[in-house]
Length: 297
Length: 273
Ligand SMILES: Nc1ncnc2c1ncn2[C@@H]1O[C@H](COP(=O)(O)OP(=O)(O)O)[C@@H](O)[C@H]1O
Ligand SMILES: [Mg+2]
Image (spheres, rainbow over the protein chains, first blue to last red):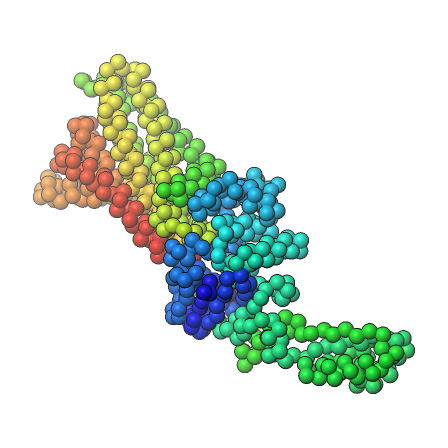
């Protein structure tokens, strides 16, 4: 059974169509990234999944129940965009509060805070925390009680690179334990390596929903080949391959996915003239731009 | 029950750190002491002990001060969470919306209970020290105490409703001051003007008592005056205490907090974070 299913979900705010006929599902243990420009509808979709706002049309099931129902809330954790807490409470008091709301032992607060790297600051008021530290308090509360579905709205914003890596490690562990994870992000490069599937929203419409490899294939974006020639051979290499010389030793080629192997064969045939070759597949940024602009037309 | 207690504990902690506990207690203590000091001069109203006199003046004080403290504590309850951006997360936790309000209510009522206890306690001690017969007024003081909490509970509920309805703390603050002025000052002035104009006619005898009951502050005043039989000491609007039996006023005192809390829940349910 899927942890989360959406079908034909539609939502407007006045004249603004925030979501149009969005349909996808998230299975247990799966990490799905929701990508889209500002205003694409990511946060709106998450709030509908959580039952905070109602969809105008469409069906949603969260852990087999209706969004916002007691059963759905009991198994779902949420990290809102720009998460905030009362500044007068300490991190430890805030997490104890959330533990008690979920019927858990408040003594787990310190271990939870330690898990997100906040052991030192646990007894300081949240008013003194940086944005990244508040984000980590937000993550700590989302880990309470082994949730079966995590809905994380831009969870890595405000985190430094080290905390980001720790964050993704925690997430990997949760997914291995069978939790379904839906997260939105702007940091495309890290999403690339750490999620199983990508859903792209563009102006409220879902324009892609697939694994990264499949999206690459569908977009059929050109691959870049960077050839490093032996000193002095750059011009000859460029001529032989009809490529563009980039500097003293480098020649750049662009080719379609189908041409890739043939081109590599040509390069190999040049033998000693070529020192090295790098293959640069289209990045997630390129794919993302491809599907977003395709939809806009 | 645990979620309500968890929310109440956090709210109490916040109120302590924001000095709301200290402010409420200090307000009640200072006003109660000033009042007893002012009233203790030419003591010995014939046949009445000093504590009973104190209770009568505390009643007039409570009508103004208890709703004010309750409204000041409650106006931020929902609007503040909306503004800080903490409400969306709170609403994804298990438990009904009423649970959140109930937790805040428990904390705020506890603070009010403490503040009123300190204020009345100080006034009572002063009266007991100056008059050996003052113990006779203890029953009236106790009645004043719990009815003050019912009054406070009503205005806490009103404050939450306003807070949810206004959505922004600034607007909510302005609105609760408006509510306070209307309920405890202007309402009585309006009725008084009508009574004077009516000059003992049908309005004064039949409509006026019901209008009094339509305001929680007046219901509180009527209940305490009617119950203590101290109508003579009351002036103006409260002179109508004789028209209304104490049990009716008591019934209203109990209904008002429930009504106000129900109103708050209705307003809170309308909020989408
Ligand atoms: N409460 C609201 N009232 C009116 N418009 C809204 C509201 N929330 C979101 N929107 C609009 O809906 C669209 C999607 O917003 P959002 O879901 O926040 O996008 P994202 O999270 O992808 O940046 C935007 O055009 C936004 O202005
Ligand atoms: Mg957003």
